[in-house]
Amino acid sequence: MLSFPFSIRAASVAIALTLPAFAHAQDTLVVSNWGYSNNFYQPFVFEPFEKAHNVKIVTESGGAPERLNKARIRGGVDVILLTDKFSQIGINQGAFETIDSSKLTHLDELYEVAKHPQGEYGPAYTFGRYGIVYDKTRTDTPITSWCDLWRDDFKDSVAMPAFNTTGGPLTVMMAAKCAGTDAFKDPEAAFAKMAELKPNIVKTFSSGSELTNLLSTGEAFIGLAQDYAFPAIKAANPNIGWAELDEGDFAMMNTYNIPKNSKNKELALKFIDFSISAQVQKDGAVELGAGSGPINKTVELTDEQASGLVYGQDQVEKMQTTPIKQLLEVNDAWEKLWNKTFGF
Image (cartoon, rainbow, N blue to C red; front, side, top):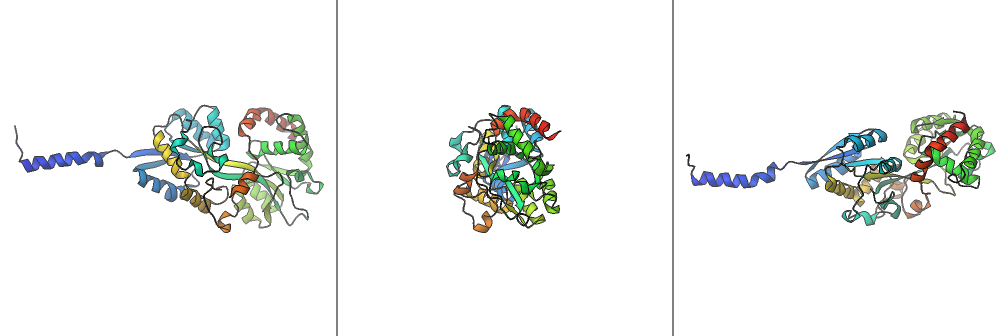
C-alpha cells in the first residue's frame, strides 16, 4: 500500500472539497421565440440573466405554429414567447403550466390586464394594437371611427386583412358594431355588413409587407394594421398616420408561458420575472419600438421614446379587449361565412 506525505494528502482533500463548486454543470434554459428580436434579447435580457443565475440560454426560433407544436409534442422548451392567439391555442391544448404568481416579484408592477390575460397562465410582456392607418393627404375628413370604413368616398381605397390574419375576425366584430349588433350573437348580420364594405376594398393582404406595398404605391390609402408594421409603412409613405378611433384600437399582447414538459420550471419563472421588470421593459420599448409597449406600469419614457407605442394608463384603458378565446371558438364558422361573402 502506497503512503503519501501528509501535506500532499491534505492538499488533495482541500481540492476535492472545492471541486463541486467548479465542477457543477451549468443549467441550460431553452427559450422559444421568433428570432427576429434576438439582437435586443441577447445583450439586454439573455446575457444579464445568464450571469445572474449561472445559466446558459439556448434559443429555438421560428413561426408560432411550428414552435408551439414542437414545445407541446417533442418538448425541450422551458419558456415560450407567443402572441395571445397562439398562447390561447396552447392553453386549449393543455400545453402549458399554470403560473405560481407568488414567485413573480414584479407582477404587481404590471397593468391589471397584463397580469393574467388568459387566466392563471403566463403574463403578457408587450402591448401592441390593431387599428386603422391612412394617408391623411387623400381625404379632407379624418377617420375617427371604425364605421368610417364604409364611407362612400372611400371606394377602392381600403386594404383589408385576410381572414386568417389577426385582424380579419376583429374587423368582423367591428362590422357588427357598425350594424348595431353583436357578431357572436348574430354573425349573419355581421357578414351582411362586411358585404357592404366590398366596394371600398381594393385588395386583401396576409402580411405587413404586403400592406406596406399597397400603401406605399398608393394602390390603397387606408389599411387595417398592427402597430409593429407601422414604422415600415411610415417610412414608405410619410403621409400615413394612425387614426384616433372613438371606439378604440384592439389590444394585442405577446405572452410568456412555461410548457408542461419543461425541465427547468423554477428557472423559467425567474426568467419571466426578470423579463417583466421595469428596466428590461424600458429597454425593450426603447430598443424594439412599435409593437413593444411596456406592460410594466412603472416604466417612464420620454415623449420621443413613447412615440408609436401603447404607453401609459390612458392608452391601455382606451383599447378594446380582444376576445381571443371566443374568436377561436367561432373561427371555422366565420371563415366559411367570410369565404361565402367574398367569393373564395
